[in-house]
Image 1 (cartoon, rainbow, N blue to C red):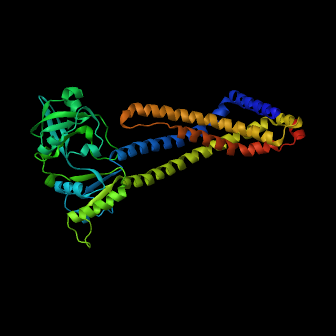
Image 2 (tube, helix red, strand yellow; image 1 turned 60 degrees about the vertical axis):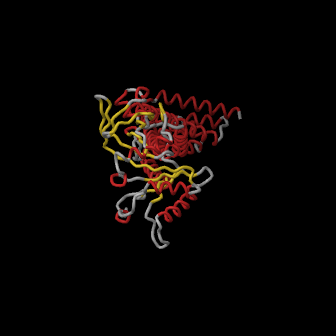
Image 3 (spheres, rainbow, N blue to C red; image 1 turned 90 degrees about the vertical axis):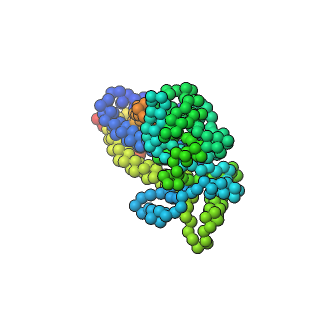
Length: 419
């Protein structure tokens, strides 16, 4: 056992010596592996980061929330929009009935949004601000990160008091910092309202939807004095399931409640949509799976080229060290030791290429993170590091097997006499 370890240790030393002596040959051989590992790990890192950010945005919508709307989520060329055109819009009175009759609901809220508004404070103003009108429990369903101030009270919501919560882009544009915005009276869409809260900067969602950074949130009764949601918006009802209730159970109960509320006959189709986040999640699984397969196929071609490069350098190494192989076999080295020696050398070469590829991916992630900032988090994960090194080792094993097998079968007498 000890002699075997000594032979393997000397083989690793010789492999490192080969790297130092034949720098150009080693560089050209490692280039393919480096490019291959860089490609495959860069693709997986990009798709993993994209998936992580998209799923974070999806989960922010609420994995246990049902959205009662006129239009079902979806799209594409086969979307039957004409089928949903004449559906009625959800109404505030329906939200109250849902809240009263749905035992599976932990919280319900009514909301609508209307864009293109102007907000003014003294001589400063901003245009293109989105107004979001919500009822009391909206903050229990959607995560609103209030940095300073507070949310609406129940009395403010019921009375339609002219108070507002500002998104990050709005208070940054008018007040520089959130503390100075609190208590100020701004003019929004021609109406005066007092700022009682400011939101933390969230960044634009990758899946669309409401951009809270560029919005002002108002109590529903006050918001509807500015815009009539029945004519100029697409309102919706949000229903959050109780902790012990599944989304499926909530959805089934909501369907019955909504059909009873709208007095639909058993033979009539639903004239409302019950949208849920799991629909988007299932679509994302298929999309990211296809992206990973496509990226993997591209990277495999680079790895094949790199594998041939490693195989070539190993054949040359075997040819150059034929005498040494003969001497080792003459003093008792077995075929398995010779085979393992050259396999380890091939794996070592590939691991060096793998480390270089991972290093370049890491540099790329740092550079991209500096450019895009905190809105899009891109990280080289430990999983992808292990994957890259594992692929490098496997490529080295496959590329080095035939040269190593050839070396292990050499006749010691013939090998010693060779030039």
